Amino acid sequence: MRRIEERGEVTFGQAIKDYIQGWVSYGGRSTRAGYWWAQLAVVLYFVIGFLLSLALVTTVHVLGIIVLCIFGLSGIFLGIASTGLIFRRYRDVGFKTVPIIIWEICAFIPGLNSIIGIASFVFTLLPTDQFVAEKENWLVRGKDSVDKTQTTAAAQPQLAKAAPAATTTSTSLPTVVFYPDGREQEIK
Image (cartoon, rainbow, N blue to C red; front, side, top):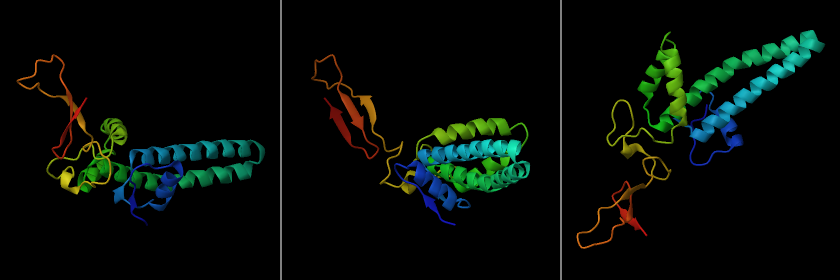
């Protein structure tokens, strides 16, 4: 078991490598690209397996059934690996471990599973550290626990219009970029 800590750009090959090596790693983080590349690989794996077993069942019955069983049993491995991947993805978005566990248990409650499935899909689309709060609480990490070297949604500059100076008679307002660390920069 290897702790997966994806940062920055993740390629298709790196995502598959992290998915396989971290199949029981519930700690660490997986980026949005790492999550979706791994999900694409799982879908391709099952589509190819289904087509291969379908072709073999129509020609060599026993071999086709064996291939179908192998791909079916590998679903157990992929289910465990996907659970680890979703834990890492939620952690990358900003959630702490206990709320993730509660969330995943609630996914098995009839009536809630479709709502949780839709919300989970939305969570996997969010950028890194989207839910990081000013101060850490039981649900999400605080800004003090964010890796400063990684570009996050919280670290992106915010564009805003600055108020005109009292002596300025111009009708157009300058554009100012406000950084999370308090710096301001006027764009001309």
